[in-house]
Image (cartoon, rainbow over all chains, first blue to last red):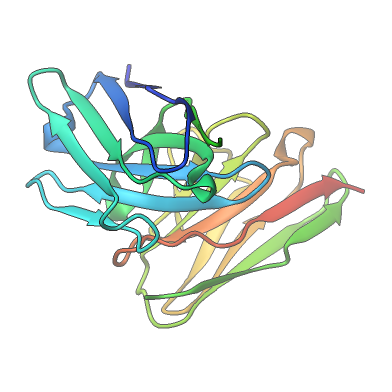
Length: 117
Length: 107
């Protein structure tokens, strides 16, 4: 059974940093395309980033230069390093496995990031 | 970047109704279009991938169609558990933009 478990969310001040983790079981992170998607309170889904199995990362313009997606193959874990955080980054952050035609078929439960002073 | 326009933003319907949600891309995305269902406080659930392929375990009352720029999600006979928010998403390129969402409510 595939499980994705996010952690690392919390309250951070504007300008601060946070690193989210997504621990995977039942699949190998390094062999898959893995994504981060976020959802601000009461708003729709926003795609944030993807890392391909070959290691190439891609980002939404809204986070480019501030967020970094990476993975630790030995821990089978996906990360999202978030720097220079802004109030508009407040959201639930989901990790997901990308499958056929780039669809996300497995999702974590989400972790809440709140950026506020 | 490719823009996705989803409509309607909300929809009221009754159990047993047939409903259709549309999604339009600002340029051709072939069949790289996916549909998700999301219920409050839960992660999204994949319903349809590659525009018309039904994800394993999803009831057959859900169907998708389209290619190029125009796509539809159809629910043939609404069930009580179908009242939720639905999103389209392109996966032809990055950014993998989502549509604005359609909130399906009970009439």
